[in-house]
Length: 447
Image (tube, rainbow, N blue to C red; front, side, top):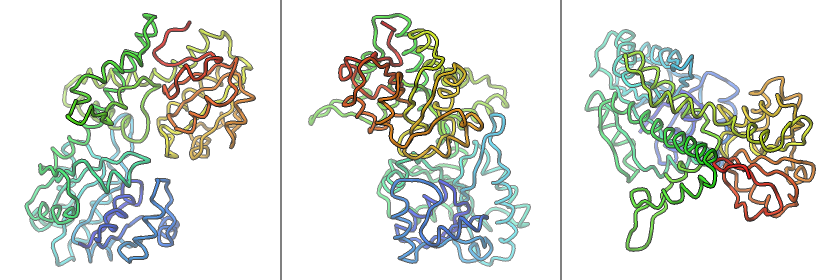
């Protein structure tokens, strides 16, 4: 199929490259000339594991190209997939980029003789595609749905695992407002053998938000329970959650043994969720609910717990050590999760900011996200030393904080940490592996 993907951001680029890898003819459209130039020589402007290699492959096969010319791309396409950003604005998503994109597509549709299905890939609140997008297309074209197609195909991509998630999905959702668009979605994803959910666009939009809201809720409820465990004393929240994990509704027992599903990784105490999806999506769903007269008490609580959770690290250190002024502190991990350079809503921003307010001497390390973190934290970066060798910095540090769950930090157990304070905010290492250190973590009472 001939596909135009509008937006070469994280979702658009990954989707376009993966669709091209399955044999579709994909054109990715973006406004920025420098991004287009880079993509056409095989250099992605975002970090995602496996993306550079796959991009070069689809360029070599001539199944993928990038351009700034939306009109020329639309004239050849059967599907126009909208994958522009929907940033958060005071808790609500900003749909201005979607509206602008739809308006441009609609203007070109007036002169295009063939039928085109417009598919929303961007994350938009329930009711966006069948109202805002449809009305804008009908206004721009002077035509009614049927003369063009309309659908919604949400993404479920985890940063750092996006290529795998797209190529080996657990499900694909076909939101559609007309049968011809459903047929095209079926053809588009025919190479994938997985569960396929066929619903209207409003339901497709809600599936995406409900998915993220429930995962975020799991994280917050576990963190609230972990904080209670620490206050009660004599209870380790990680031991509690291990007991919970063994409930066969979480980890079914099969004839070949017990399953250990990935969902259990959301049931581990930590310093909160971040990134471009969970915070923004939960806030947007809350805002929509409140606009409809629903108080959204659960989602408010999820956000409140998450907002406060990074503060547990420095407050615990203060209770244990007293003043942190001048204490040599090493923060390991600046992105919101491993294997990404994304620092949006990262707990490390709050942790480092709290340390600086406490006048600690702070050094930081991250394999990918240092430059993005400097930009995010602003002028405060001048008070931080950023390192390229965290193992060397362990010698210098009095306090070592594991702020992301990167597997390389497990090496801490083989380094000299005797007499140091190790705060494992992600419950990555076994306390018994650092017996000579003062081990602290979320969900354990101070000894």
